[in-house]
Image (tube, rainbow, N blue to C red; front, side, top):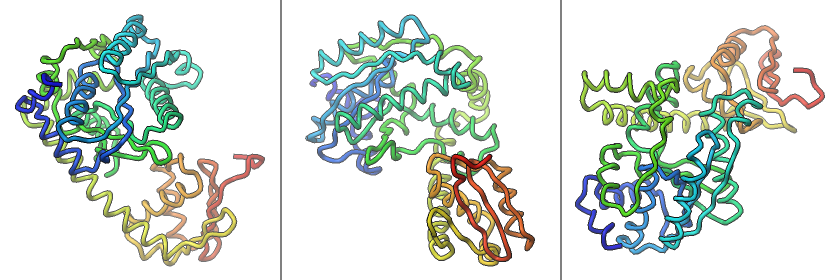
Length: 345
């Protein structure tokens, strides 16, 4: 990998990626890494950067490539084959899939973007589980982070949403998702990719501003950048600060919940008076933790959290149902449980 290692002095410095991987504990010395690679410039650069880093850092990483053709664009099938050819050239295992995302989106009532993301991560998770990879790596970068945080701000998100994407998060079971490029700009990645032996595929849908993310990318962010040329770095710092604060508040909420909750045969019992003594921001996080205990994939709407807080503040008997969960308050006791499949919603 002489060409790749010569890029240590390039805009997207390999040594900076080494520091990112070490600082955020993204990879272990012998990690088995499945790289999500569409053939676009970001994921193409990620494949070659990890190859260079494996040699530069003298690690025992096992690297493999996975590609999904979402069957949205006619070029998708050919791009999958181009990535397969690159994987063969590099001597890396390759896993490909053709998934009818438009059909899934229509059946589930989802946008193409949401349905594609679900299908892609389901495929990556399944391959990682079946083939014993402990890490899935994606090419998300600082521009993606800025767009994500901006989209969450527009929707009126809380602190968790302002955090945007983390460098690493659990994916499925013991498998984690990592984003080694999260502090690298798109321009830096393009500068790195110019010296590679493979030409990146260009997805024309990335220019379609009818997609909200593309509208933010091509219309909103450039206007903000005219006011603050360092907006990408600024939003990245905002995200990191929000993630740090959110981690602290969630820790406090977990510790508070340990002293509050009683668990009995699928029921979580809480005390009204004890909850009233806890600050509102921590109470909301306690409710989220209770829900995740009962239904790990569910999340409260903001209106649910308002109802729950009203239930805590009043001394009257009250109950409500949401997300297949029943919450009942009698005197000082709040009983939270999952509805049986035969119970009416």
